[in-house]
Length: 300
Image (cartoon, rainbow, N blue to C red; front, top):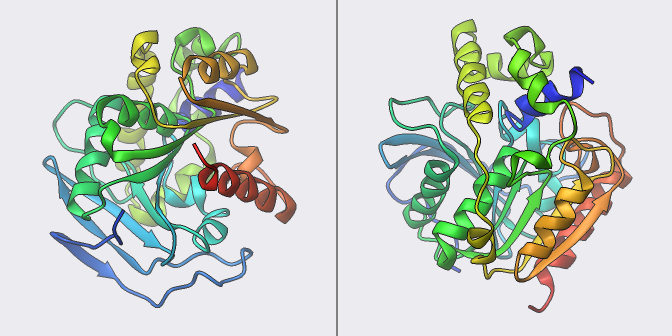
């Protein structure tokens, strides 16, 4: 019971064509939208944008379809949350994959570290890239951020996908908050540490991220029901049948959203789409992407 809550705490802790306006380019490669899914997706552009005082890292993948913003989980990066499924998504979507404040390539700055601030950063990034409206998919902590984008910036959102995310503290399995309270840096999954060190080899960066995400999770307060009800975008709520966000909570969230849909998938936290801490096969990735594509292509 101890290990699973802590993994979530870390994995909480788990339009127009995008244009890299006012951003600093660090990479540019040919489109790889037809690349086999067993190979990593290389961005057609990767760089930094000045966003609300933050130097925010983002990547663009794919050249066709409606823009799709991917928001990773806590303690994670683009690669740890989305690396396996990104090649498939990039075949039919113009993916905008981001790394939020203090995560991955995006350095921390001295300002509030909140889900509402993250949501404002996403909205400002879309303005910077001249994207009037996008689909938003967030996993774990990223799903909580996606909800806040829907609440605070409704005109920016065409459709929402909320994967393994909570909007109330009582949505977590028994023992989760006690496990978070006792958690230490040693409990952070090694694969997360390894990916972070590829970006910044200093031990201090990983420790700082753990501290930031842990404190934010422990201070989490419920999102009021009326704010969830204010989200008018069609929304798909996803959850694993052995997730740390309870199935009952996912059902409640889907019913509270005015245009909510629900899918419960086999697996643990992020396992159903190939999050890096789980071994998965290609059929799982294909099934997940088919589900996402069908929802995003559906009539309202």
